[in-house]
Amino acid sequence: MYRLKRSTHAVRAAALVGAVALALTACASSAAEEPAEETTEEAASEASPLLVGSILPQTGSLAFLGPPEIAGVNLAIDEINEAGGVLGADVEHIAADSSDADHAEVATQSATDLIGQGVSVIIGAASSAVTRNIVDDITNNEIVQISPANTATDLSGKDPFYFRTAPSDLIQGAALGNLILNDGYSRVGVLVFNEDYGTSLRDVLQGVLEGAGAEITYGTEGEEFDPTSTSFADPVTAVLATNPEAIAVIAFDQTKSIVPELAGAGFDTSKLYFVDGNLSDYSADLAPGTLEGAQGTLPGAFPDDAFQERLLAIDPELKDFSYAAESYDAVMLAALAAVKGGATDGPTIQANMAAVSGVDGGTECSGFVECIELIEAGEEIDYAAVSGAGPFNENNDPSSAFIGIYQYGPENTYTWIKAEQGSL
Image (cartoon, rainbow, N blue to C red; front, side, top):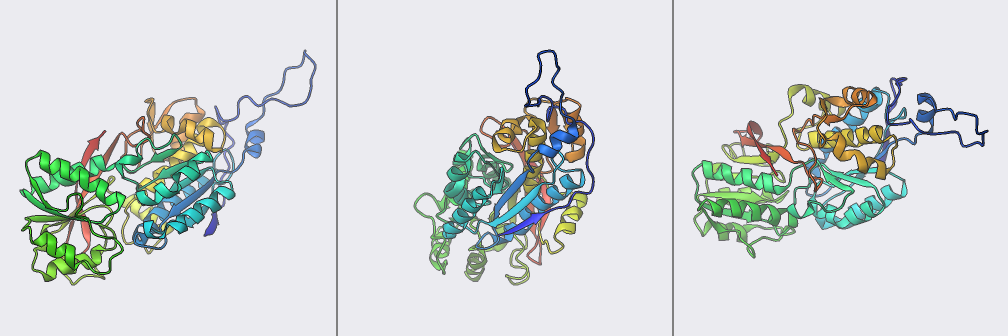
């Protein structure tokens, strides 16, 4: 774990409407005296700094998702602090490792450490299974947890203090199923690991395919593979024995071993479909051309060039941008909720998260500066998420979201093809 504190480059002197209006002097006074309101500067000096923790993958099978997510968090904090911080104080970031579900003790210890350090918000985890291990500890302490990447359907409405800026698999699963159907396939195999994220997404995919008259030839309940296996020859042999026209691979790092097995057995790997958990750069892992033509889905709008450049200024080594926008949005929403509520504690942030996301309508705004100007003017806001996600619904899920469709080229890297919008 390491601690990052960003410096302030400018301090706002404008009044924070709704943030500090009603604090009165605690000293006794005569009945004839009018208690004086605090100035913005006095209230800001009394506000506790917004302390943001993150539990994102630095090790384990999801470590490839960590850099863009951490960069998204740090970019948002940099921009907030450059604008004067939250209620006049710098936002501070304590970054901790989540690892993966096979190393559950890492995230558990990280959560314990962050709770002990008094964070008000925790960004993470990336894995739905990891979140299940830590969400109760976090939310029972009235700390707001915002995952930028959890998609499991059963996490919807998990707790009033649990939010996510990534859509549930009800949206991604439907997009993946429609992609496969539109490509003309009606016999589909599924290689899915026996992990909650995988089975949840598989169930949605299965419903969409079968609802359209297609067949899941392999990979239904009871036909999942062990994610801790060192060899995947048996599930590959089993799925190929059913002669599928296409195969959806729902896994994490295991994909690096699964794809060569499929290719070695003669399967046309251009007919493979990936999901957010394994849509990755395989240029260093697979022979050139192995994945050419294969496709995958990833929640969120494709980040534009300007946002990518801002992220690369934070981490020049970034190879992809998966869930960077959702991580950025998570921090922005928490900071705006604190400004709107006038305090940086968890309950205040929780009470204002839906409002700043635009659930009550309001004026659309982009970025921290534009949004706080509206809050200071007493207006309701509708934060325009970089990820394209809509306002939170009653389950604290995005009410709508984009799902990006990507395709692999000859170097085993993927490019954006199009985006489809879905809603709940």
